[in-house]
Image 1 (cartoon, one colour):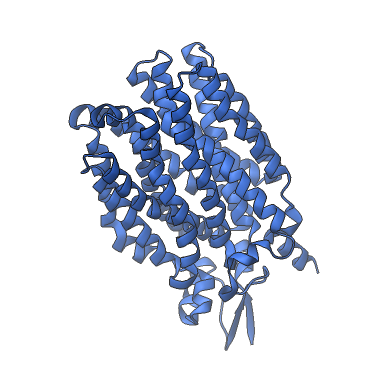
Image 2 (cartoon, rainbow, N blue to C red):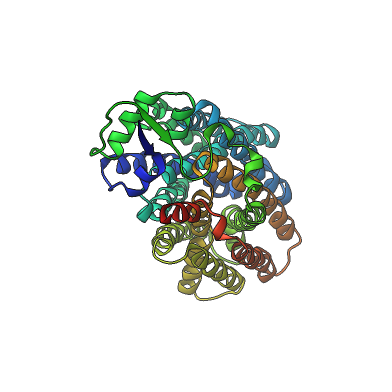
Length: 444
């Protein structure tokens, strides 16, 4: 009987149209996801004025989507093992598109928050599944680069929100940027047709013929002569991908450190995404200039994600992450001081690279750390716990803004989590990772 290690096939595959097609569709999901999340921060000053809400309440409205994302990360990261990643991604796309658009039809804080919570379920659910998909199918030598290229779509969505937001809000009000988010729901049938299914799921439901066709797309030189036995050599069986496995085989401490790092990083990401415009207008910049800072923040995030992924494929990913988190601490802290416009733009770009971009590299590392069958669960729980930081940030920073403290205090509060995240990443035991396990097996 012929035996095929699925992970070895994808590890050693050459880049071809299959991979670029997968990258396109997964990145497109993240672009939409990034847009839907960024619109709240873009529209925040106009919403506060129109709905007459104070800063602390506005922070809670923004956090509604983040609270939904926490549940979505965990729920859909686990559910994909039962219904398949392809259908899970399609369901999530429909959820966040429809309910982000619905938020633009609301007229009070409560119904706005409810719509954003449901949209957050979809936004949170799509992330662990596309990360798991890209990690599963990317050749090992470019895996970090492919995952971060895909996830840079998050920042592209933020840039798109900033560019569209300026014109749409002035011409049609803050509601228009939310209504525009409903269009991607039209792509659901195309997503179901274009995306491949997860290999562990195909093994679980015994769809061997589909799995063979999929492997031939990944490696056209494969041949199947007689009966075939498929296996995953990275230490898990598909039906056993449960939460408890994240703590098995010496992974407990590292799992907790991933959770802590994601909490701290997402605190910084959503503090900046939600309040940077307001903080910069409060420091004397006009609204147009403050919106330009959001554009620069997300542009820096794209460069940080792609550059961080490139570095992670050439150097140890832990060292890359620690260095980027320390850069985040310095750049964000310096934003609290009034500097020449050019220097402020540079610092905002560096902050975007070392927070939003670094979150992408962190999730890429989590995707590589956990074995194939539990990958979406591991990434989902890391993001899910991290959402607590995302939920806390808009509310806490909103309270600080309401206290009218010096601007430096606000930015220092956002910078401190970067140091904690650097310590957490340093404490991860890479020897327990799936990639180290596979290396050890293949050296035997």
